[in-house]
Length: 453
Image 1 (cartoon, rainbow, N blue to C red):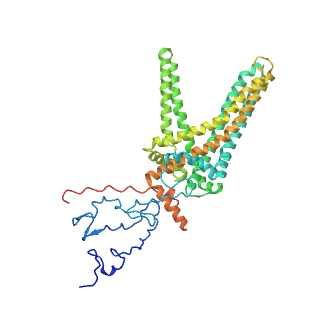
Image 2: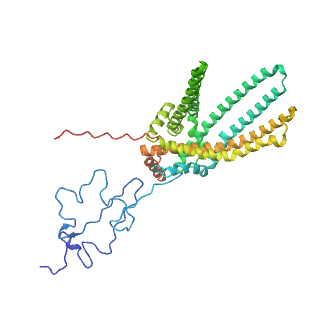
Image 3: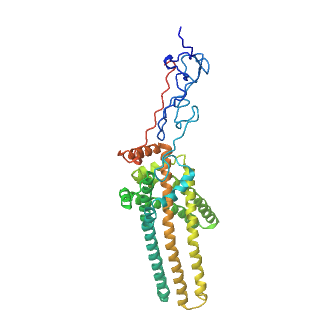
């Protein structure tokens, strides 16, 4: 018989027993500190052993062939599995590793508030690109177009006022034609430069998500090959809506031309129903295709593939996408009106202040002074509106780009690809662009075996 009278639990190692040792462990022994997990991963940890009494687990008798603690559903970690803070109390709730945020947004699916606030933060993170590109690519062309249109309209009105009675009709028709040409020219210039600005801002938001802060020249390398596709999509989209509006107007005019009460009633009903239908279809189509420019620039897709891509990504996310776009538009519109409305109000008062008798007198110089004052105020208001509108377009484009990134995070796990890219870049590895990587294929559904197989 041994002289050692120390009681040990059945199954414990006799060599580990000693003064102050219980269950083979010293009371001052510290559990090993588990390594910190990366975002999206579990860190393995051995759960603390259950106290033993009399050779059986504390939970009672365990039937052979079944796992300890009951049935464990496949695909889920066992109880106690996960990362805990170092020196944490055994059995406490597992810790949580927050997603990294290398740049503009955290690399996880975005909340609604983040989608609203992040576009405004994009202005502050790199104002030389965002505000500078807006003023250069949209503000300056809009100001130039406004000056040309204002000067052209003033010249045409001056010719009409100074024309003789026999030439009034011909000069008026020429003035109307010239105004239409100026309007079309302004639309073309604005469309081209707006498409280019859209591509630059989309690329800037994508690179800011990864923490990059590029120059305009570096961003232009990303956009240069996609400008033609962007411009083509913008013109085709505008042309499709012009044809839809022309179709509704043509139906209304045709019904009105029939004459009689039936024709008038039909024209009114067609105009009312057609107008409401166009508004509903415009909201639906514009929301479904809002992220097409982002797919064209970021994924470098051709036009047809980008349209199909945008349509699939917005499936089951229509109202969330529409809500973000509509709220951002309302904010930008309200700010623009607060700044530009005072100029229009002052312009309406100038005629009554400087030429109060211009409408009752026969002196043409008085009327010319009123027109010149109105045109001057209109020009100043257009310049201020162009600057504010350019900055507002940056916010709206950034919001749409973030919606595109958020949809890919939710549906394709893009956030894990971005985290992997950022971590590899920190270790000096060179990985391909994570935005252009194809989405992982969905796993095939397991086949159900025959009974008795």
